[in-house]
Length: 181
Image (tube, rainbow, N blue to C red):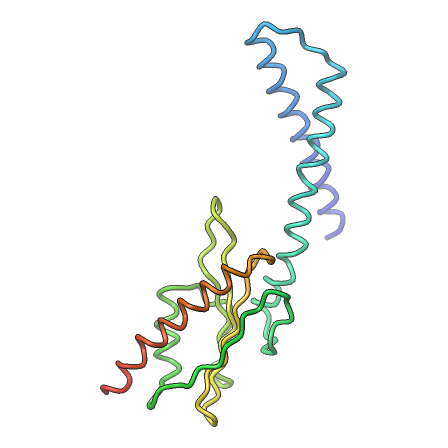
């Protein structure tokens, strides 16, 4: 695995360097400017080194969160931006019905019907953000729903809070339909 990562890094560096160098060559030729080979080569090297650093730092933060989401660990997440809330479950609460409601709005990454635990995340938009994720536990003995929300990219507390509010709305809209039946 480590060799694949190193190979990917080298290929990415060469591709980025060549792309930057090629674009600068075409721009200089189109504008009729002098193309300084050494200067553009140094700029391409700097650019090819700096761009991946930001991506590596983001992935370093995202990878443990994705691993937690897809794993079977049902303890409370230990990330810094976790928003936690405890909600009283309505009378006649049905966990499987809530699960079908969540499937329509979010992507479930882990489910345990025996322990009544769900891990799910918002749909990822490539151009906007990575979104937020949540751990939902239902304790039928106490009638409580434990909800822990966090962002996938980290350091975006407002996105986790927004997802928490959306889930709370979902549970509030879900409660009246349970009480009527």
